[in-house]
Image (cartoon, rainbow, N blue to C red; front, side, top):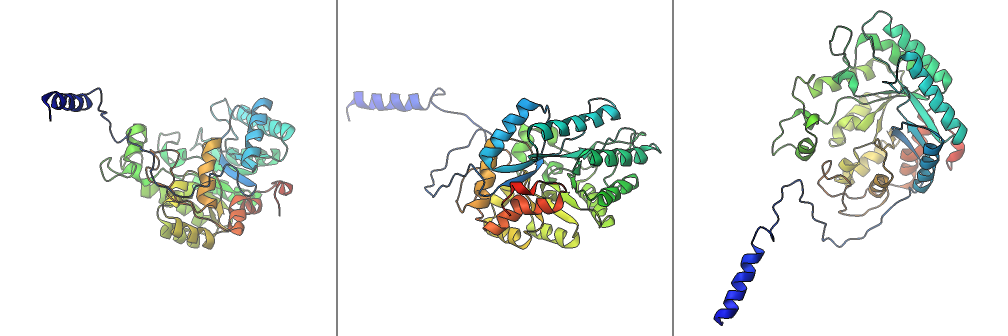
Length: 372
């Protein structure tokens, strides 16, 4: 080989290896598109009308409602349940009650039947001898005004404190009358307790949520921040056991979607509990055979929900639930760096998941929106 040719090859190799032609990256950035050649069925509209049992909407007015209804029609969403009914942080108890009434009026004026609202508890002053009485009064008034259920945020058990600065456990005795009242009123309680267990575990190479904790460091907790994961969840389960006459929806599958044996035991133990699947679809997508078996067995106990509202993200839910596609990406790498597989659920299971179970559990839902 001529010297000139060797010099050219060496120069080209040196150029390619120079910093300007190499890319230094960490795991956070590494996210190559798959080279797999498999059947693809992109689903942008649900097969059947569905109820989103877990959504959060603020700033409700005629314009926003119009935008939502347009997107809901594109998705085939029949009813959106807004769990943010009370608007806390907007003033005193009276202004919060006016907030929920105003929201219900807006929904019923511009899109009757398409939206439902769950109310929330105001924990200000918890520990005062009058707190429970006031909470019961407000709950009754909110339901009379049109609220269809009660949403409990994860703040209970994590950062709700009483008037003395002590953490309020999920199963605090002062709340027993509230759970019982919800049962008397015939409304469901959707409750979110704690966060994924990995948030309490060491942030190291063995933590499956490492990337999420790296990109969202405020989500990392220690065993005493403010209590162990297992303790908070045990408090929640104690509530289910003490109030069999109240219907509960355990949001985010109670963080058991990655352990469907535990989830099965949970449903068997607490017949008054149902699961919402919001924000855990990635767990089903990596175990399609086991998940399909679970959905078939407990088809009467599962409700569709999304949580954070984003129209395009529903597409992944539809694809996991309705198709038998293989190896397709999830929409948030920090939630799931693995690939998804479709469950291919039957029409009957889909109908129950999408709307039939919600029609049975949530009072006052417009049945005419749904096929049967």
